[in-house]
Image (cartoon, rainbow, N blue to C red):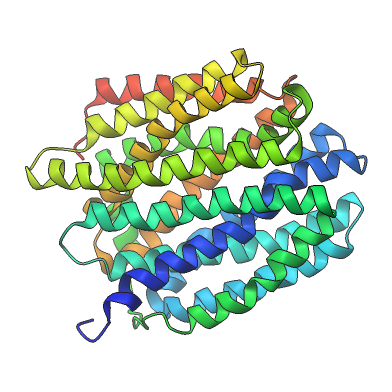
Length: 383
């Protein structure tokens, strides 16, 4: 560990997270509009979007165990090759079932990438200013999320969806090159019973409930937010991209601030529960308010307020994870948290696709998040 440079430990993982998020969200932001335009129903779109998290749900825990036992660096590289294969497939898939197959392959690569890169970052995180480091890691992913959405909007307006696919496919080359520069952390053999003991802790179980409730709105965002902006608010594709870009970059800045704040709270020996609850509550309430928006300005105002809640939640959640679990078992335990996130996203996608109206899923997800916070305040977990 001592031979790992600063850039290997922090800069390169943050850059890889940024690039992966850029290329992924250039596709995910607009693929729902593309599917509707080529004739898929809203329910089919909800099912297709749910394939991505469903495959991740099935494979995440096995991948988490692999990450602890095998070099995460090699798995990050493998994930990029799988992701590239799925993009090639999506370029040629135009019917429902072949599209579903390609999304299954993409979900496999995404699950492997998310666990391997995040676990590697946690394993080399160190003991000092962990919140700030996690804030920058989160910020990189968020900037990529916004930039990918913005670039995708311009590519789609100037060309078509195939241009976005080709853009993301070309991005796999620099991703693989950068992944070769990641630190190589050797794996160790871990007993399954050790993971079971970690997860069975009461505070961890309550934490998992909160993670699930918060993640519901991610499913609504993936399956319905672009459609809501384009079909109901009547924004053009460039304006959709700007909403994502502004929201994501505000979240990125707030994530760094939240990381600094979380470190201050943590260093004073105080728990992170209250800032975590506040973040989830703000996120939930602003999701409920989205149903009342009707133009670019009201949507942007709601989303910027939403960014405060999301950024605080994401960074405090990451720091809580680093406090709850030891680094040698981080892959498997982090996989359990990511499975919970994926399960929440999956349910959110299905609910959003099944209920009438593109904003209804946000209302349901927001209400669930607020209820989960109330439950946690009564249960009083320790984190």
